[in-house]
Image 1 (spheres, rainbow, N blue to C red):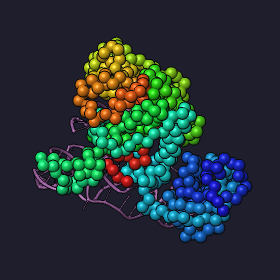
Image 2: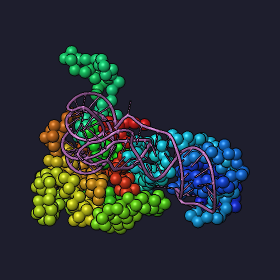
Image 3: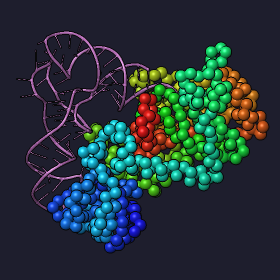
Image 4: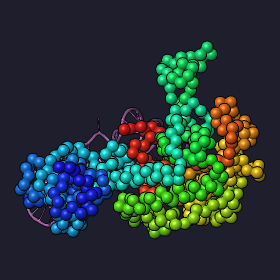
Length: 478
RNA sequence: UCCCUAGUAGCUCAGUUGGUUAGAGCGGCGGACUGUUAAUCCGUAGGUCGUAGGUUCAAGUCCUACCUGGGGAGCCA
């Protein structure tokens, strides 16, 4: 007989049917006459209550039904005699698919710390919290493709291995097949990369943007969605060495079009989550509430689902960098010298400044545009004022920068000049510059940190908890 | 990488100004009881106190280094 997923069983349409359910035991409550088994198969946050009459089963089998064990249960669905669930499965046959020694199985039917579960990342999928997170993560990945596909964007697979070190987005991981103990050397004693696999030094990508632009300049609109690698020694709850990034790149889009897309895109994802992940969101929301109930009322954050609806229903605030500096200079913390870092036109905004704008001043997602050119990348559109570039950062409460993007400089001369000023090797970038040489057009794009977005949707606080197996400095377990 | 902080039983933590045989709750195991809801009740086992040095008559407790986790900062998505 074919297995029925617990999600489908709980819909309640199969009352009185005989079904086969397979899954893992969450808890078991036993007594002399009857056992109650909470069975979960990952298809939903909810468990199926299995009722087993002790007299119908071998004692040795019942002893093996422990938290973590895998079971296949055949039985009849009935209306539940107890409260707490509508439907339950009266077991006729129980097959032990895989035992789990209760003395050794680390996941107990109790609340574990996120730190402990992080160290048991291979088993944390079996908890309510993490199964909810990763179902939502999947839904968001799917919604991203759905959104872009619906708008006629092409999913472009930009390379993971790149020989370009000019992206300027941080330290890179080397990729090499040379013998690290005994690499071939040139006459001058340098490592001879001409003998390496690609005949030159190569790295893992820090961004698919430059290649993405090449695609956009023919296909019109593209997006990438793939792994990204940064070898920065970043030890924060917002950084990973290996993370997933979504990078749309659009021909004929100016900065305003870019902002409109970013806002519509984020809102469409949130809407998809609200429409398709309500069970999991509700679980995470109540979990957050539990966690925060000890905090003083003014420090508690907004209910997760309220927060998502708020972002969905309100326009993002759009201001220029220059306006942001003005607001900060007129702010109470500035006047009371509460900011640790100076506020001056030309400096990059610090976390404390971004948080003030988003969490205190506007209490809303904010899009900051037109940053000083000195603090932004070479490829950004140079504005007519000669001082700023058409950059765009989307700032979210708690998370900070969730999107970084810009209109791109399409003028060959201006771009080359800027590259020389910033010591970017112009000759090596001939392929990038060819797009400006031949049929150059206004275009724009941005990068969305997938995990940072998942942090926001799930309400989690640490980025290591929204990726299955986190890669961070000194940690590549699993 | 910098600042702060923590590392004691499988998990979450307590351990007083350094002073005999290191405690609790949960989980495990044994039993009792019950259409139960992370059940309840009784009993029981379980710890080279992160690692390596040092101070001291005496170190879980003090000092140093290192490792790992957490909070904050920088870099950024």
